[in-house]
Image (cartoon, rainbow, N blue to C red):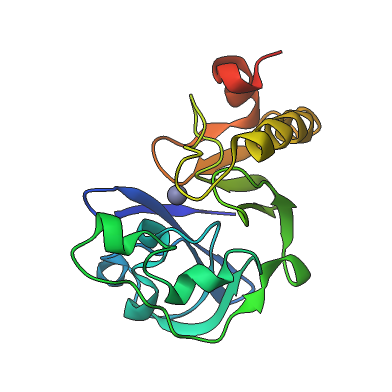
Length: 190
Ligand SMILES: [Zn+2]
């Protein structure tokens, strides 16, 4: 599967990922500016409901929107999606959404937000802001330290059971592989 990465939502520099499966174009975490790169109809998948990851949704021709039920309320709540604190305009995505867990392979990874998810396809894991190449996501933006601790144990086991050459595609920063991640990320250290 060929995955394209675009940098969106400056200055937050979100990684927005785009790929096609069976003629359907999927966009993960469309940040502001994504319409420069994508103009066809798309299905949108969201790792978590922070403004920098959802602020480009309305730029797109959306044929389906999938997010966790715990984070779905943030789509229309500028305080919860943090646009009222971090952006000069409110992000309100008033579109129908569906429960991502019922339609896609996900892993529940609460901690950065209540409803954070890994989204898993064959050969690639989209980790949102829960796990980056060298570090993990903040817990002070609507998340929980307790939950993050439990999540990290679960995530470590999850990655240990995946092939080392699978791609790990985080919400910010560089793309890595499962093998590389387990070596370099001290939060997932052996
Ligand atoms: Zn975030």
